[in-house]
Length: 299
Image (cartoon, helix red, strand yellow):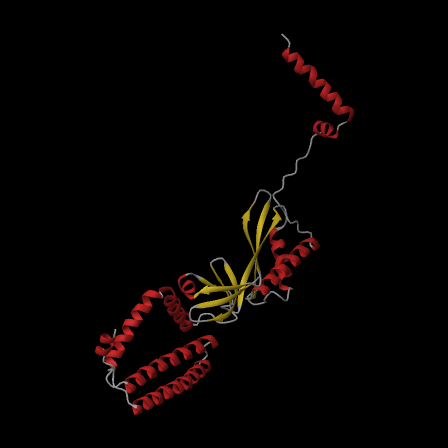
């Protein structure tokens, strides 16, 4: 052990080098914090989201801090060349990349997502079977509050590789409701009544206006599709759908528009009515049927 230590040659260190190295490190750290604030504010002024501005400001600060550490090491130990230091950093980066593939993949995906800035904190999104409101965006994951109040942590790699629906990507969205009307009713009149009922609702937008289209024919019904535009948020679409269903059904009742269903009504004939009703008529019929069965069995 002593022989190994004797053969180990340490770089020469001087007090002036140590002081200068600490000064370089301190200046680099302070510069990193100042640049982080400047980058964050600049990106915010340019219309970037708060999460994007904050993350990119932090990344710039980390980069300047790493450069400051490298510069302080080379100043403190003059025998260490920057090329050697960069080579050591490269080896460490490769090892870290192999060991933390998933983390680094989510991190790079997070950088891409924040750079594109397609959705922000407060937007409502759906990915796979999950839906909710974005509450926080980080480098490796995004926090989503589901509509039933649960916290969902989605890896940024998943958000980058799968289809993400941004429900609040635009100001308004269109919803549809299907209703069946009897095929014997005046279909044009039924459509007009439905559109007028939807127009009277404050939850439904006047422009684009509501529409009603006949879409399919059933056994005894015709399907009417009601289309309307409302606010994009989940609660707004639910409230608008509820109001449309209530108002249209009430208007159908008021204007005597028959809402149909594929339900078959069987009208019993006189004989079947007597059988189902019971009584003497049913007993007499049953008694008459018994002898015929016995006669069939006689030789």
